[in-house]
Image (tube, rainbow, N blue to C red; front, side, top):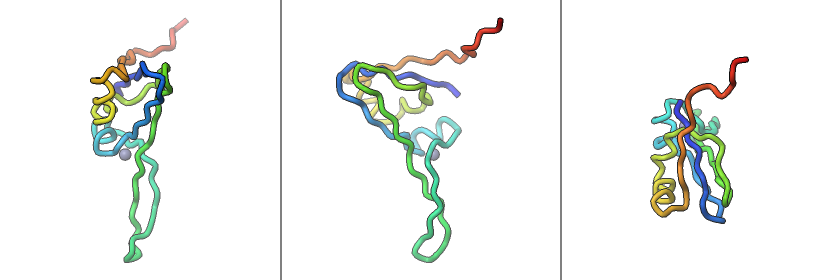
Length: 97
Ligand SMILES: [Zn+2]
């Protein structure tokens, strides 16, 4: 899976949510918190809660699935210069000895 690191250029922390339709579907993996609940009719339904993420001010995020770049909030922040994104190299970081 391709990953990106988001760099926060402002002092304010950036908060985002990895919405299933925007991120999971594109990434081909589900990051949501899943919960079994019962509907009014007593049927079991699986509810998905999007995984939240944040980038502290003047700091950088953990590697995130590249699909976060499709989130509207992230796109707006990239355009306004709040965030910058860098691709994480896909080659393994562990060097063979
Ligand atoms: Zn999901």
